[in-house]
Amino acid sequence: MRDLVGHDHRPSAYLVYLALVADAVNGRTMLSHAELAERTGLSKRAVQDALRHLAGRDLVAITRTRRTEPAVVEPRFPWRGRRGTSAG
Image 1 (cartoon, helix red, strand yellow):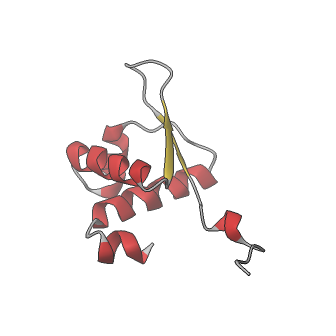
Image 2 (cartoon, helix red, strand yellow):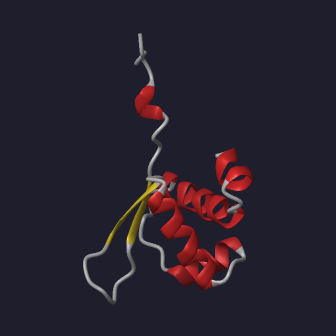
């Protein structure tokens, strides 16, 4: 996760990811951009950009049932699936 803040220079993406993980632990996955903005202290536009960046890095899965409803955003943990595999 240091990658998001240091290498990518996207601390907003890190904040949004942490908020999503915290809500996923509590079983909630439907958050509007406004709710995420309020929880992180970011603007709605910054949240939208952060979600786009996280989706591009495959750190979140975004699904929409309808255009007017909030998207279901699920955090992914790609490093969990790599245990036990070796390259040699």
